[in-house]
Image (cartoon, rainbow, N blue to C red; front, side):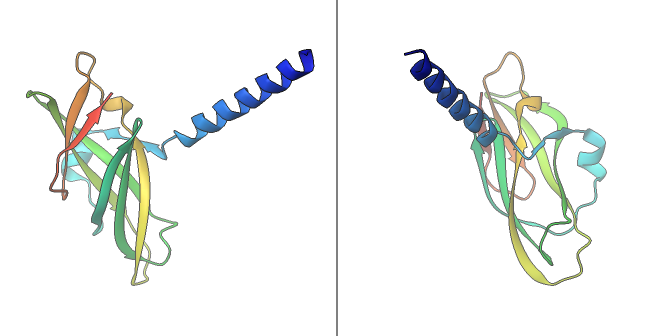
Length: 138
């Protein structure tokens, strides 16, 4: 009996740790007005944006060899538009030093917890180059 309980506990713990790993984002949103305004980005085409749990998954394309050396960041402007729900403004910045001309598609996820506002439970996110406001509920 004790052995069965021990095995069940180990299985539940293993499953829970796998679930936590699945929810990990690739990076955090950077909150920096200066970078938002003056940050230089190589050309990028946004393909899709979805929110899964606390992560914003941004799918995009750019020219390159394989995209492995790309430095990608999602930058928040630090500005909050007082509306209901409140709104924030972001842009994707890509540093691409690859010389190839192939078109590479890539998806990167960003943890949105740093942009949460204590008194609110949702935010509309305006992303530069994306025509649709993305609603983030937390």
